[in-house]
Image 1 (cartoon, each protein chain N blue to C red):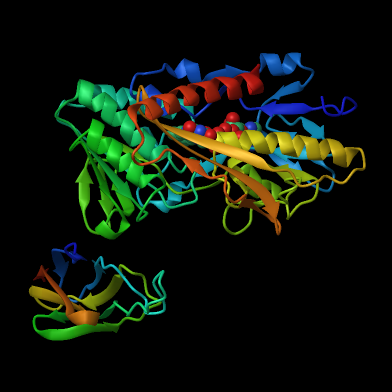
Image 2 (image 1 turned 180 degrees about the vertical axis):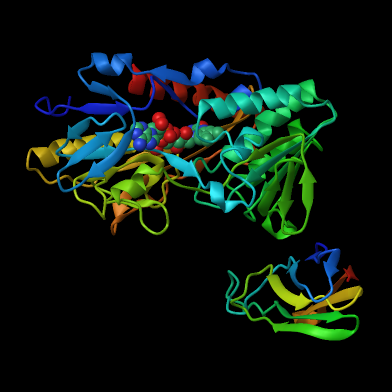
Amino acid sequence: MAKPLINVPAKAKRGEVIEIKTLISHVMETGFRHSNIGEFLPRDIITQLVCHYNGEEIFRADLFPAIAANPFITFHTVATESGMLTFEWTGDNGFSATGQANIAVVD
Amino acid sequence: MLNPTCSVTLVADGDTYTAFPLSNAVLAGLRPLTAQQFGYDKIAGSGVEIAAGRVTGIDPQARTARLGDGRSIPYDRLVIAPGIDVKFDAIKGYGEAAAEVMPHAWTNGAQVALLAKQLEAMPEDGVVVISAPVAPLRCPLGPYERASMMALFLKARKPKAKLIVLDSKDSFILQKQFEAAWAELYPGLIEWIGLSQGGNLTEVDVANKTLITDFESYKADVANVIPPQRAAEITSTAGVADRTGWCPVDPITFESQLVPNIHVIGDAAIAGAMPKAASAASAEGKICAAAIAELLQGKTPQPRELGSSCYSLIAPDFALAIGDKYRPTDGQFMEVEGNATSTPADATAAQHAQEAKSADAWFAATTRETFG
Ligand SMILES: Cc1cc2nc3c(=O)[nH]c(=O)nc-3n(C[C@H](O)[C@H](O)[C@H](O)COP(=O)(O)OP(=O)(O)OC[C@H]3O[C@@H](n4cnc5c(N)ncnc54)[C@H](O)[C@@H]3O)c2cc1C
C-alpha cells in the first residue's frame, strides 16, 4: 500500500481557517460482486478516517462502498496552536494506516 | 462531388493548417514543424470557395455566418469543426500569458515551436514536467506519446534530465504498453504520478516555474501544462455546446441536437465512444458531407459505420496503435463489437516497427486526401 498523502499548511495565523487534504490508495472490493466462478467477494473498504489535533479529535468520517476506492477527503479546521495533526484510517480486514503533519501557528 | 449543384464555402482561419498527429515527433527533432503544415490551395482548386477569416457570429434564424471583417455568408447547412479550446481557468495561475512560459502545445503550431525551443535550451540535468488532464481530451494517447518523444530527445541530448508526468487520471489508455516500452527504451527516465498518488495539477506558479498538485510542488525547467478542454469558443456563440462544454449531435447526420441546420464534427462533437482523434474527425467529415448531400436532395440519410485508428510514436521505429469501429446505436456512436484492435503488450520489435510505418502511411494518406 502506498503511503497516505497529507497536506496541512506548514504555517498559519492563530484563528485562521486552514484546509486539510488527505488521499489514501486502497484496492477496493465493494462487497456487491461475485468472482468469475460465482463466489461472493467479501467487502474490503476503508471505513473510517479520524483526525486529532494535539490529541483532540477534530474530524471523523465514516466511509461506505459508494465512496471512491482511493478516498480523497478535504476538510477545514481552525489553527489554534502549534503542534501535530495525526490521521488514522481504518477498514475491513483489520486495515489500518496512519500519518501525521506538523503545523506552526503564529500570532 | 457528392452533389454538384451545391456550392461549398470553407472559412479558414489563416493560410495554413497545423496538423497535430505526429507533431510530438517535432519535439524529438524527428520532423520539422513545416511537415505538419498545409495550405488550402488545392482545396480552392477543387471548386470550394475559400473565405479567409474567423467566424465571429452565427445567426441560426437568418442562417448566416458572420466573419470578423463583417462579411456575412448565408447557408442552408453550416458545418463547424472548430476543434477545442484549452480551459485556461481550470488551473489556478494558468492563462494565455502563462502559456507563453508553460506551453500547452495542444492547439497551435506556435505553441509546439515554443515547447521545442524550451527543450533545446534546458540544462543537461533539468526537469521536464508534463501535466495530463481529465477526460475527455483531444487525443487520449497524446500526453503519453509526448512523454515518449521528449524522453527520446532527453536521452540523446540531456542525458541527466528527468521527466515527470503528473496525471489527473488514475489510468490511461494502453498504459501497460506504454510502461513496458518506457522500461525498455527509457529506463528510469519517466516518472508517472497518477491521481491517487497525488498527480492532479491544481495550480501553477509561473514566476517560479512550479506546478502545484493537491499534495506536492514540482519545480520544472520545462513545464508542459495540458489543461482540461472543451469545444472551441464558436460553439458557445452558436449555441451548439451544452453544459458539458461539448456539442451533442445526431450520429447519422452530425446535425446539432440543439440548433437545426448546424452540424458539428471533429473534437467539438460528442461522438459517443469515438475518441477525439483526427482519424475520427476525418471519417465524420465524410459521413456528414454524404448526409448533407442527401438532406439537400430530400432523402433520409441512413446510419453509417465509421472507423478510427490512432498511433503513438515511442521511438523512430517503435509505435503503438489502437483502432475500432463505431455505429450509431440508440442515438450514440457505440463500438461495433469485435473490432477493437491494439498493439499487444508483448508485441515484437517487428510489430512495433510496422506500427510506426503505418502511422506515417496513415498521416500521408489522410493529409493528401484532405489538402491534396
Ligand atoms: C499532440 C497531439 C497528437 C495527436 N496525435 C494524433 C494522432 O496520432 N492521430 C489522430 O488521429 N489524432 C491525433 N491528434 C488529435 C487531432 O489533432 C484532433 O483530433 C483533430 O485535429 C481534430 O480535428 P478538428 O477538425 O476537430 O479540429 P482542429 O484540427 O483543431 O481544426 C479546427 C480548425 O478550426 C479553426 N477554427 C476554430 N474556430 C474558428 C472560427 N471561429 N472561425 C474559423 N476557424 C476556426 C482552427 O483554427 C483550426 O484550424 C493529436 C492531437 C494532439 C494535440
